[in-house]
Length: 78
Image (cartoon, rainbow, N blue to C red):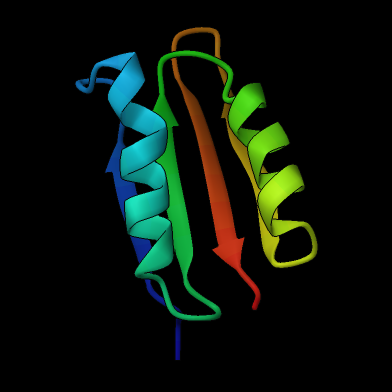
């Protein structure tokens, strides 16, 4: 059985709204589910935030690295 993936396209949101929306969706994921974000810039600051707040409880997979769009899968592992 394949685990659920929630796709969140951030490109239409204002930059100041993005992290709040990401963590709102993240908090509602079950263990083993994945949040896929689509962004218009490198989400490196978001990765740093996950490392600081969720170290050992998430997986990070870069699916596409620009130059126009960045796609990242963030899996919830605990």
